[in-house]
Image 1 (tube, rainbow over the protein chains, first blue to last red):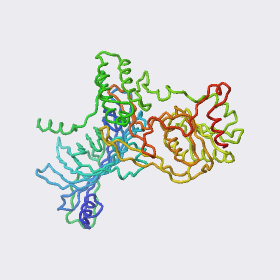
Image 2 (image 1 turned 120 degrees about the horizontal axis):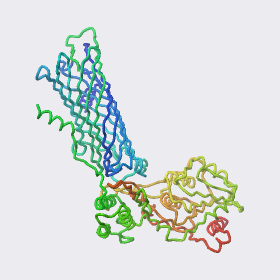
Image 3 (image 1 turned 180 degrees about the vertical axis):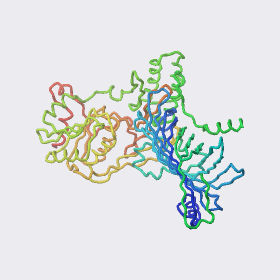
Image 4 (image 1 turned 90 degrees about the vertical axis):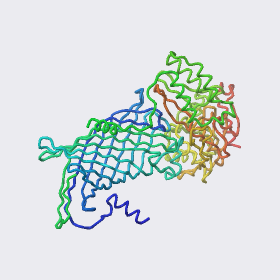
Length: 273
Length: 334
């Protein structure tokens, strides 16, 4: 059990795996996104709600010296807000969330310009969906934690002496827990009881979700511009309540690279992510 | 390369298997959607099968026969409302931009036993107002409180201040006739000032699945004594057929309190906590989703009998006398 906890803590970077000084390159990206969202939650309505959404994404990545400098740490904060309408256009719903993901990827370089990554991410997400015209079931609270399998591919493309880095990443939650009311249960009744009784185990069988991110980094002399597309689909089918939230955002932002140099760096990794 | 790009685009537009209903204005689609919403989520099928002989499948067939492909929205609305009225439930409504479908026979088919003009006469002009509570001391030193809607917010301070003002009275009349409900929180808050002990008042259930008999085990509901001023003398709660929903639950709770007597007519009922959903055409529907039981596990959907039955006498009414208030005064002076 202790070793399992240690592995999870190492996975999210809470425990340093090796206290060795080295040079580290950090990449911080801040992106704004605009796109379309779809909200479907049978606790509130059997209809799909569609509408615009905005998001903010902060991502940091760094190579570590672990595993012969083939291990990177990634952390992502994301918040989003969506305004959606029912198909008839006579009812609105407002949705919002804040999410955090953090974890490690192992790197392979099968080709000089291609880097493949695979690893795991721990994630936490809280949010809400508020339907403006429902009576005793006007809103749904969202709260979930999960462990995701994550794969990514980076490819360096050089066009007319300018470097473009293309990255595709997909995160698939494989196990976790989420809050949900039971089929016909009101929040009034939940409030009278124990909230902990409403946490359910999730896995791809009852909560098949996928977050995909495609980005292109354009390197300029003093700036790295990032353009991206994110398709984040989260689903669950727990307690006979079907939930599906999809947001498809076009992202734009900037990437900053920081180099942290410490006195001794025998196996320093200068790989920029 | 082309195939790779197509594969990438397919992957990026990952669309999972769960889909909701899209816009559809056809009569059949909306009829079926409404029937299924109620079939899956309505909570009183088994109870009403016993009490009224309700057979939801038979209802489907009978009303489906009334559909025609080119019927107008108003005609469709009428058929759907007629179908819903088979449930005989005041918590069931269908909302359309031009009308609200409703079932109000739970009070319209009975004598009202309440006259606002008489209530105004008893309150006079120098009554106090504490949020939704209207109160005064009657000439025979009986406190009279009118609370017309549990949608009108009341705080602990409002109730304690009112009870402090009425502290010297020999008894209290709590008149909730015409109170069609509102927030359960206010109903519990007011009732909590009439008990000194944590009291079992009833049970609540919820549906755990689409089957008509899929319910959670009943969860006990307790009334906790208020921290503010608590009334220690006799109370008469006046009820009529218009006491519905949260007012019905309030009567259920008050009947469990010591020194409380209910007087008047049976309450209207409304023992299901309503939830909402909607149809592909965009109309909203409300229905009872979670049943509330009394402390003897009995349904309160069709109302609660008073301890002392009493009706408004038309001859009293003509003289400006409220029979129920006078009966309550006599009861409190005994």
